[in-house]
Length: 84
Image 1 (cartoon, rainbow, N blue to C red):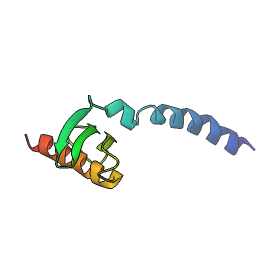
Image 2: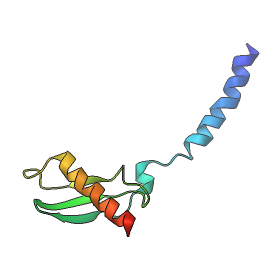
Image 3: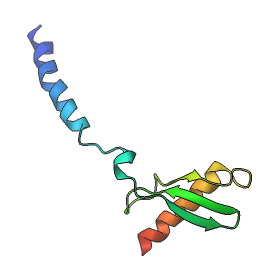
C-alpha cells in the first residue's frame, strides 16, 4: 500500500508542473491578418512564426469558399511570412 501512495505523491506534482509548461495555441497567437484572395477577403489567425500547421481562417466569405480552402490561404500566408 505504500508504493501507490509514494507513486501518487511524486507523479501528481510532476504532472502539474509539466502541464503548465506546454503552451496552448492561444499562448502563441499573433494579431489576426487579412489576406486578399480571388474569392474575397480572408481573416487569418496565425500562430508561431516558425510553424504554420496551426494557422487557420477565422473569417471568410462562406458563400464563396469552404473552410479547408480558407485555411489553405492562411497557411500559404504563414509560409509567405516564414520565408521573409
